[in-house]
Image (cartoon, rainbow, N blue to C red; front, side, top):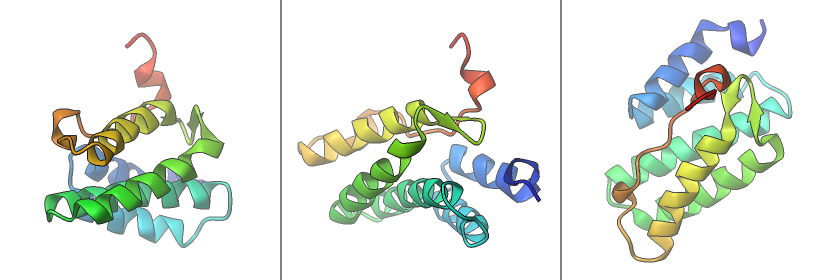
Length: 124
């Protein structure tokens, strides 16, 4: 089945966008195991960004910093978009939070990352 047609993909997006980071990680991980590159690498990056936010919720800023950096790095080959998603927006939001962590700021001063459909991003 095409990843975009898989109802588990839609559910994973919904969980990510609602800030259910742990659940989003689990949902994306299930899909990640079934993929080959480049989708596998991209999903791993999204997974790492979700897990970074689990670490933030638990006060583990070091773990969050490491995983945000790794996740951002895995997004780069797929920029600006893939799988119908605006990855540039995800990259920017995640990078803003990473910069805050690296500079002793509060990552919550920046909005959490979202996985926006590219057609939803048009005109916004």
